Structures are given as C-alpha cells and as structure tokens.
Image 1 (cartoon, rainbow, N blue to C red):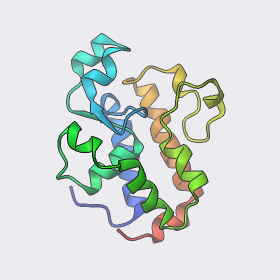
Image 2 (image 1 turned 180 degrees about the horizontal axis):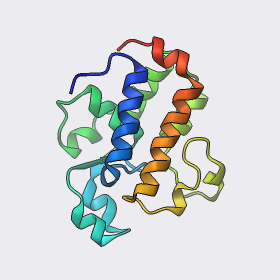
Image 3 (image 1 turned 45 degrees about the horizontal axis):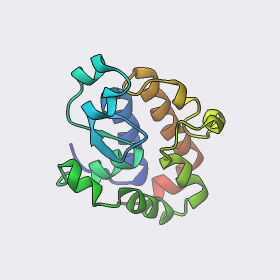
Length: 153
C-alpha cells in the first residue's frame, strides 16, 4: 500500500481500516494488543483477534509510520500529540481534533458526542462499534474537507 498524499487520504484510509477490521479498532487505546483489548468484553472475539488494535490517532500514525511494530514502541511515540499537531497544522482547531481522538467513551455525556455517540453502549470488536468509529471519522472529514484535501503529507 502506498502512503497517503493528503490528510484527506490519510483520514479515508483510517475510516476504511476501522470499518473493515473491527477487531483492530479500540478507541480507548492508541495501540494495544488486540486480544487484550477484547478479553474483558468478549472472550470469543478475543480468540479471533490478532495483531494490534488502534484508536483513530493510532491508525493514522500506523499508515504514516509502518516501521513502528511493537506495542511497547507505540507507547513511547506520543501518538495523540503528533497526530493532533498534524491536523492542527492544516488549520483544524484543537476543539475539533480533541473529540475526534478522545478515548473517554464510557462517560454518560458521550451519548451526544460529535464523533462517536453511543460508543460506550456497544461492545468493542463488533461491526457496530467499528461502524460508529468509521462514521465519526467521515463526519469529521466532511466538516473539514477543504483543510484535509489541501494538506499535503
């Protein structure tokens, strides 16, 4: 797979990855062992899982930095800060980036969250959970289409 050319491309790759690999999407962690991410919610799904589960920022970083491979290496990368800075450099306000990358999905007030409403009511690893994650990324993309399409990587 070739690297994305614009932030729009990067966001679309991220949405597609979340949508097509639900066992590898977990909004609560930048990067975490996929089996461990699912063990506490569904043992059957955990058995199927392999590799690393990423949040939105983690997926974005993964597409830009294929050389980082272990969870331990990920934990030292300050992924959230780097991806936030990348989006902010395109003119997207912090007030929009923070909710996109937020991992606090279990709070009651997240029912009306702009990019992942009701995520706390769904089980990690399911298609429904991943679909909300992908839809949230695409909603963000629609709101900031001009900035994302004009930002070259």
